[in-house]
Length: 355
Image 1 (tube, rainbow, N blue to C red):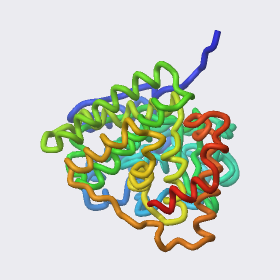
Image 2: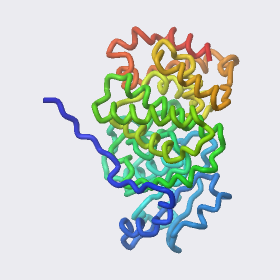
Image 3: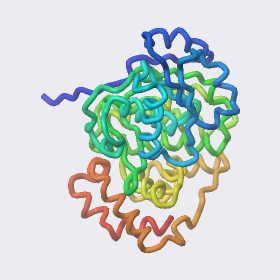
Image 4: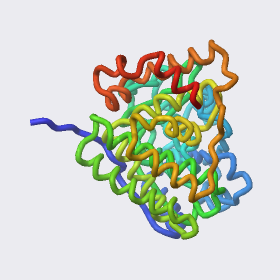
């Protein structure tokens, strides 16, 4: 009999106005210590910090998400927290923002109890010590970070996640009111991250029945949201994002993410748009879904950047190809154990040059 033990988020608080319950929720986690609130830098002017039930000993940290989260950024944040608090670790981490802010919160929660650099934990199940408890409050939906076991980080030569049960949030608070002001293009690219997660999950071999069911529902919700953009679908988008992240936790990503990481690492594209650029050239791997993706782009009036690799150097292209080749687990799920004979270096190079 085959079975698998997999971790899920323990508690979910969902609904319009759910954010007002944060004070009571914190009491369930906090003992005598302090809380670290990690906020996306966009919230410096959003007013959300004024609504936080923070105490005088708590820390409110704004993190720069204009670029992908970096291992060095995590190490500095961890060290700053410990220095400020004379080595005392917090009772709780609260991540507020989009996928980058939530990934940073997850990574910091891990690194506060594990020695060394976060770069040492980029990979599968490398975390040894239990992480600090953590809560996610998404203010941008689509990445699924709130429901996944991965904190994606960019290092010196690779973009790779801390993929561990210790990265899972202990509670997710989802208030659809918090995503009502997201700009159109950012909403679309983040939403497509969810759509692509589900496509890769459902088309991969590492999926189980839980992941398949979650991916099917999330795919339908994404199509509902982005084929009817004039309606308020904030609840649907939040649910899709969560289910998409949970689906990946019960499966694996695929060719799109394996190639998008090169676009992010070398060319600096944010994760959502990098996924879209890559997905748009992968009809041969996902022929059922790329036409729907393009229909959603047309309905939402989205135009992807073109010619993004036109000026890459040979060294940059080689680095992008090598980054893709490092993604053995996703590519095995997508293409099978013989994936190196299907997605050769020459093939990857050809696909990149199309972008």
